[in-house]
Image 1 (tube, rainbow, N blue to C red):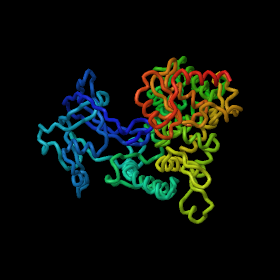
Image 2: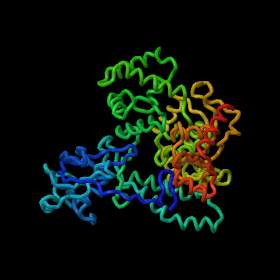
Image 3: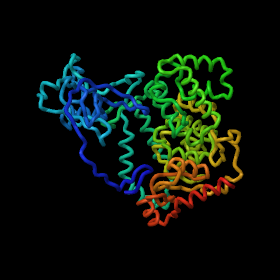
Image 4: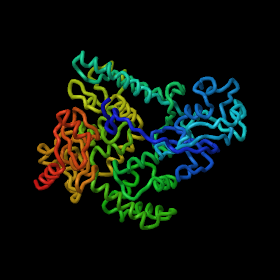
Length: 510
């Protein structure tokens, strides 16, 4: 039970069965995501499904692909190469049942076994007309080794042992996170680079550097430039991919390094890049100029530390986690220093010298700091793994130098960039200082995202989407619903939209 930052775990949604259709499997391609996950994608004969023509559909992972295309749960013998090194294959053109998950995302549900399975599945050498179902040993994009990821399995196991852990905490009278568990998680993550055992997990990942694998690099820059990140206007994923294919950019900071200055028009390098972008298909002088202006606006106005951390694309670090980390470190220099310290940490050296602090001690707590609730071992080990990638660290520092990043609890006026980076005299008396605030219902004249940004600027620690005992305040708009009732049951203070707007107006006038 309970709730995560996104969804309530106790809720059940009843949905109508999705529409489905039968078509033929032409081929299987491997799609590479931002986090390095290799996903097999079925290439299909186009088929109409609920008014949409479907020609591609997800197969989720290689284990699932073998399960539905071979038609058995026991793949231990069939999935392994034979003594002659031959692989499991299916014939092109077999019939498959396709549906749209949630009436949105196409996926292959199962194979249509009206055809003879013995004629469609074979263990033999390469032959035209057959599709190999074995996961690739190297990344199709960058050539790095691939490995199965057991992090998801470990998280599920940790979740199953949550009740036992809670009992231990009650008996010991402490909820401090032991670094032993975090170090063990880091060791497990390091094993990912050498593990090729399919039993360790179902998700296969590219183990190469994220920004040196083009599909992952495109995803990383799209993530960095997104609304929740740096919020760069007027640039789409297809256009970013186009810029990377033309070797105009490689890292998130590249555009900021050229167009971030107030007077970039006088720079020969900026003029040369503008001309190159303008000459690309679908661009032109106006589009390239708009991109440059958008980059300059973000660089000059700056971004909060939490959005900078989110823009780095660290695994397991989303919008809520980045806000918690920013609240702990306060400024970008302290955060980057923590990453530098983590990059040189080793468990062996800490055993030899007790004075050496484990990485990110400020987050998991100890004698000198209270644990940051909401940041667990997986998030911390992901931060450590990020710190040990030299390419990622260099990109993070270059990005920090290329734009203004203002500290937590700093008063920022968007219309006056000169105030960015200056400490507010009212930071200790902000109306929502250190509070966890949840919004429910519709606020008059203000979107949910705008309201969350407003309270964060006025000192709020975080703005999750669910109610818990840690919630300090609930803002109830029109049609507030169950969140308001749950808040009152937990004794959490609830204010209406009018009172909230009055607080915002009072803070602006003061």
